[in-house]
Image: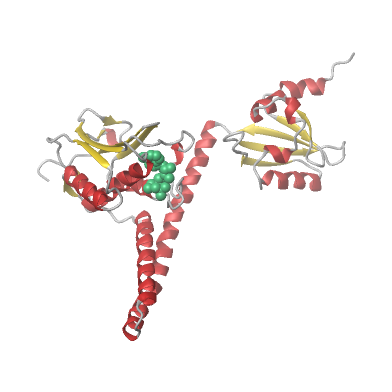
Length: 355
Ligand SMILES: Nc1ncnc2c1ncn2[C@@H]1O[C@H](COP(=O)(O)OP(=O)(O)O)[C@@H](O)[C@H]1O
Ligand SMILES: [Mg+2]
């Protein structure tokens, strides 16, 4: 019996190799492909390629291209991520086979860690350009909006029933507030900073929360009274902790929910690879903790991204804004979550002595 050398080679190749026929049915998968897709050949060979790759993937187009050209085509860093197989990025090469008619060989080269990080950065770049777009849009919307509101106010003087004109004013105000929030992302003006007593910030936040959404929530505070001032912007810091308290409140159970605010001074905490040899010192630590339902592990890496929300009426902008503002302050925000214990920890620089 002669050894089938080609099969042997494909079987030992470290990269995933698959053969699909003209109808996208799988005819062959090598062990690396089994590993890549996390299931055995037996199962994979019963499936079609479409079942394994994300819906609307450029892979299908690439296959058509290879068939039409009668030559191999490749695409780098193709996203093959599916909910079932998890995050998968690979360079893909499609080579048409002479027989059976329309069949193709797919070889995947899984992206290295470095490439995956690159892709994440690309993602961030997209977010950044979105900020630029937000700024332009905001400008284009605000002007006509002011006109609409002004016209509604004029109309109001001439009509008996003010409910409709009031509605127009309220809604334009709401859109304006939304745009203002969006604009904060695009804002690259440097922040006006002054020494801020973080306990005053937290007091304000608690008062605002108790007067509004968190009327019947239980708050607990453990503050370090000797805490030095932080270097920052009062209003923006209020926004940060208001967003965190709002999220904590939203997660609380019907009964026995509690939001805990703490502050502490940790002069020993220093941060890594610093600019010009200086180690960044972020001694002021504030935490917002709740005993609510917690954050799912798969959501964790994305909670600070804009538009990520699990709430029906959520905007997904709360934590993105928190990250933006804390970053502008030269601080760090971290999150730990387990069932009944979610902690957001903010570390901030202290105000210069005598500032
Ligand atoms: N304390 C928390 N407990 C549980 N989940 C949270 C908490 N904070 C944030 N999250 C999750 O992070 C998501 C993003 O929060 P955020 O950016 O404030 O947007 P939004 O509140 O509009 O949904 C929330 O939808 C929620 O799923
Ligand atoms: Mg929120």
